[in-house]
Length: 138
Image 1 (cartoon, helix red, strand yellow):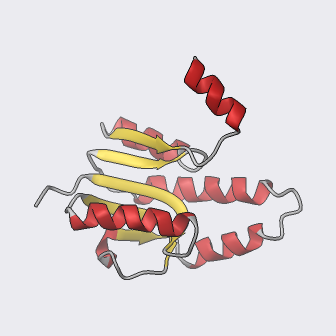
Image 2 (image 1 turned 90 degrees about the horizontal axis):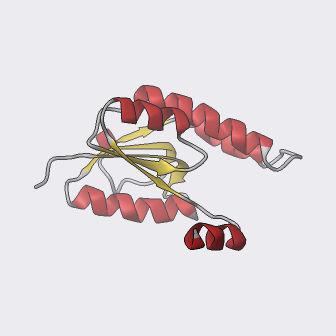
């Protein structure tokens, strides 16, 4: 078995549908190959990954998700939720050879991982098609 080396941080309910289900499948693959050292998530709704590998914000994470449903700006609550999650994640993440997360939810934790010497990778959830074309063509 490989030495665990991947810390993955994402502000979702692991196994909770949508992105949380997609991320779960990827983390299960890392877990099964022995590469997952830590999954940092908002909350967790699965037992398919060993609990000691999952660090979750828990109740506060679920409350934040619920409150963002009532945000009239449709972005402010999500922004604040991601900032709170990121600050918390930066404090609870353990050193790892590789740190991965998603844009918009990891600036502080990404910097901490880089200072520790981790290789860092970011996922991009979505972008406007014109922006994608501009990035590809330049």
